[in-house]
Image (cartoon, chains in turn cyan, purple):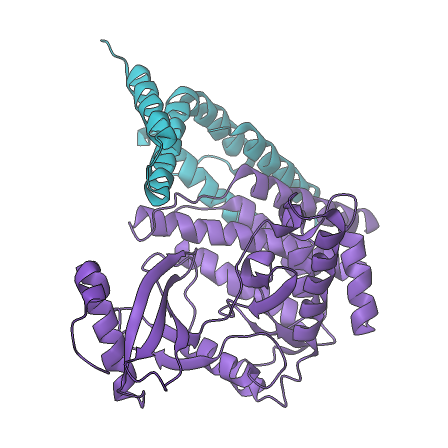
Amino acid sequence: MRPTMKEDLAGASRLMRQAERESGAPGAVVELVRNARRLVDRVSAYADQAPGFLTDDNARLTCIVGPVEGAMNATPAELNEALRAALVERIHELRDSTEQRREIGLYLRRRVHEQTF
Amino acid sequence: MTESTTQADSQAPAGEVTLARSLERFMAERGGDPRYRVAHLRRAGSGRSRDNWLFDLESADASLPQSQLILRTDPDGGLVKTDRRVEFELLRALEGCNLPTPTARWLDVEGEVSGNPALIMGRLPGTCDYRVLSDESRAVEQRADLARKFCEILAAIHAVDWAAAGIGDLLPDPGEQAAATELARWLAILHHDQLEPWPELEYAAVVLGETAPQCPTRVLVHADFKPGNLLLDDTSVTGLLDWELAHVGDPLEDLGWVTQSLRASEHTVEGAWTHDDLIRHYELVTSRSVDRSALAWWNSFSAFKTAVMQVSGLRAFVEERADDPYRPTRRVLLTLLDEVLDAAHLRGGDR
């Protein structure tokens, strides 16, 4: 079905960029439009990249913290949040400087690096 | 205050006229001279945690001096909740301390003027420029001189005899646990404001908690020292603003804030003023040596605090209290994780 969601989002972003460049537009309005356009761009990137990212991240998190309750019926985003909550608990359990905690730190760093949306 | 409607009123938006009348009423009820009226009220732009309104107090009697004032209110979307009464009392206490702080005139703790708590303060001359140290229209030498002055003002804040000024009654001394106390404060803000789990920040908090330095010396800490909170008149610093986060704590907290890598562009001058220059000049001015290891902890804490502010900003945006779509950025999170991983690795390697 056309336009696709991606085409609509790209169109919205393009129109907002035009509005940002509109001469004479009040600075406060330009700032609001810029913020709105950034959100649209983010939604566009999220739609593209989030499904694959969440699948990979949920698999990695499950390796670290084990399965969580309700995983079968959860959406990938819901499962990710539950797994990240479990990871917070694990971080606080590993109070000493263990190899596992260092691995968690490296995993977190890699996750932030890979999440580009 | 007079209640008459003027030509200026008739040209001002209704909201501003209402605010002006409300200000006049508030000040008159608290000992303000009723011959004055509010003039030239205008918004000064919205900072991350304040709405500022500039105005003058004028009188038809030309023999009465004009006053330039500012109304600082809490906007609905302020990033961090702070106490207006404490900020007001602190500004009062600082009036005799030889710092370019604004004069606190009235406190509206109940939000009678604008609906939100507010301070009414004297307005200082000068302008604010977040990026003044990278402003290439100024000579490199001039920018380095400014950076040196900023460092000296920071040292002057830390030289305030806070106990003698009565600030200890207002802002408690956390003792040698100042670092752990600040970490706990910002962790509590994270837990209050987060919309989802943040293992990155919990991880950082655990490592920071285990490596928190002792703080043998406590000073008055500004806690958001930056060019954006200074007023400049060409090459003179005319004002030192935004005391809402100030507390008694470790001097390295401010020094860590201004030397954190995330804010390097605000506090350094390429080829002329580095973080090392800043630290050495601070040591020279204060005659106090800086523990580089403890400073590194405060650098990491600064990244943590920045991330928590972004979490709070995200909540404010989602709850429609703010228009800026904040969120913890990759740059902040990667900086924080790199630093705490280094700290954890070094400590782990010792065992």
